[in-house]
Length: 91
Image (cartoon, rainbow, N blue to C red; front, side, top):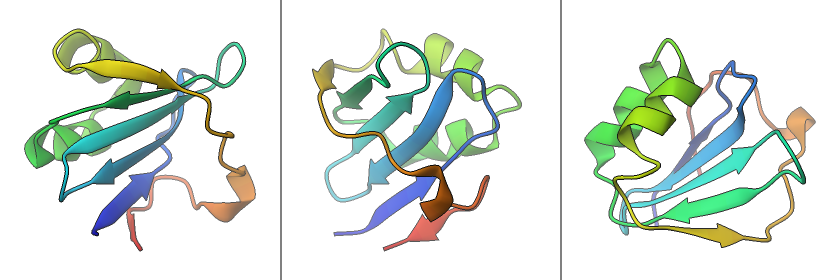
């Protein structure tokens, strides 16, 4: 299962994970109680555009939030020291 993740330089989003087999995009938000949402059937092109967007939060709001089915998850927030900012990692 190819899983990709990155931490954008953002005040809004802490981390993004993407499963290229299923098209599931998982977004960890910084605000509130570190809310996590899963979005289904997100094309890999949308994930790639999110990764290079000058504003990840704005791109998310305009191109993902209301366009793909999302559900809230109660996963723990990722630890910042496990990730290098703005680096794509493949597990």
